[in-house]
Image 1 (cartoon, chains in turn cyan, green):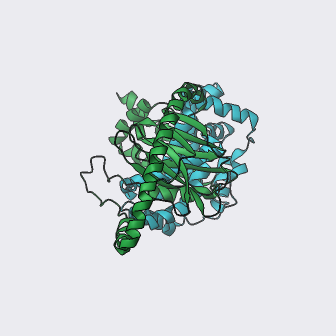
Image 2 (image 1 turned 45 degrees about the vertical axis):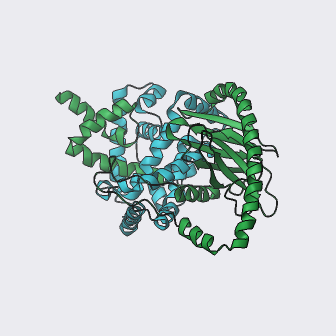
Image 3 (image 1 turned 90 degrees about the vertical axis):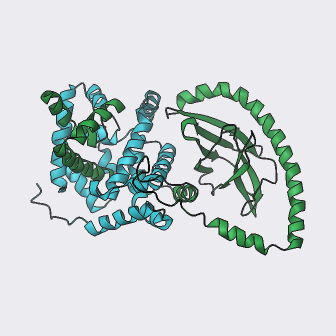
Length: 192
Length: 263
């Protein structure tokens, strides 16, 4: 499957640039923060919206996340991953915090019931960028079970235990599906 | 032990997707991670993969978000690199406004200073009035608090509480408080646009001897809605208020607030 795809070079220099910017943010540089915002506010908001679903709440959570990036930028360690990963990990954690509480989950189920999310929700929200297209194709390359588990866990914000409950599947099976699926995604995306 | 280790190792992907079940489970896995080189590089790759999933659903954020975030950044100090700050400390971000104010202050002539004194006396009177109304507002709030519990159930965040209140000129102001963080989040709905040359200014009004602190100006409404604005540095007994002020805002409120909510 990978052989049929042209190997797109990762924009490493852009990544480095972002790492450098975030390091400057860690030293209190507001102009650098604005540049980080312009690069990552879209991905941050998009991911949070995908998990939280409610636009007003997503905006609120996005603001919290971006402020946390500002406050804790000095703790970013480029040796442990790139800036985008650091920021997106914070965004996902905050989004999950917002939806995991019992009351929130109920409210979200309600919204889901009211506003049906298309089955292929990823394709629906994917921007027409090459990277996004590639992610979609790689997701298509997973088994149905793997895709379902990974999508529920990451985009749905469900814990693997909740994923198991929703699908009526044993926890150990879910664990394996997520692991095997993520390995396949990683290799398909060419993540080193 | 070996079995336990293997079981933890199988969780690298789940951990990287942020899908472990409880904080305790995360803590247990991170203890394992600290001593497991293989897991660390695996988590690294899985996290990167998850990031690609996240980047793929990028969406244009609402335009108001940028101004709201930048406004917060300008008045939010940063944390040191480590929890105890032992490794190295960064200088606190400079408040560039202060020197400029000092220069401006030096430039103010004697006549202007006298005029300012008159304004301040008037302001003081209005302030007393404001405080009185705030006292009233506090009493009203006591009754509002019983409604809080019900609103809370709807509201999502675990330690957050929410107060929604109509302003004296129409529209609603909603405040979500987080006691643990000394912060509140403010949103408004249906507030009439300020008249020409006027702005909405946000305040934290201290009781117990704490001062009135301006929290900046409210941004332009988008589909009748502003915020959410994060207000930091909330002290016990503080009251959050909004006043209508001349463009650019004022140092102290000059009129009674259109809404006051215990922060």
